[in-house]
Length: 183
Figure 1 (cartoon, rainbow, N blue to C red):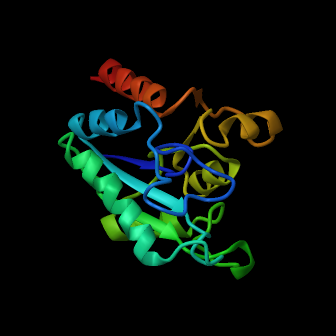
Figure 2: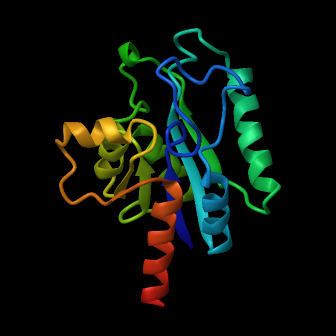
C-alpha cells in the first residue's frame, strides 16, 4: 500500500491570510482534485494533515470545518476518488499542543490510526512547518509553490534537498512518473 500526506490550505485549495472561514471561501486550486484522483487511481491512500487554528481563534467552528471537509470529500467522490482520512489541529499557536505543525503530532496520529511507518512517505506542503513535520517522522517532504510556497522558498532556510513543484498536479505527475520508472 502506498501512502501520501497532503497539507490542505495552499496545496489543495487557495489559502488566505484571513483563514478559510466558510464553505464558500473553500476554492480548489486548479488541477488539485484531479491530482488527488490520479493518486487514488494509482493505488495511493491519500491523507490530509492540516493546521486549523481558525477554530481556536473563533473564526469558524467545528461544524463549519466539517462542512468544508465534506465539500472536499464530495468533489473527490464525483471523480471516483476518496481520502483515507483528514487529520487536523484545531489549536492556536499559544496552546503549545503536539498536533500543530511543525510538531509531529498529526503525523503520529496518522501512523497510529493506519498502523503504518511514515518513513519515506511523500508529504506535500506549502510551508516550512509542513516540511518540518514531515522530516520529524522521516517522511519525504515536498514543497509546492502555491499557497505560501513562494514565501517559503524566499526564506530558503531548511529547504536543502527538498523537491519543489509549481503545484500539487506537478508534484503528483513527478511522483507517478517516478513510480512508473521503478515498476
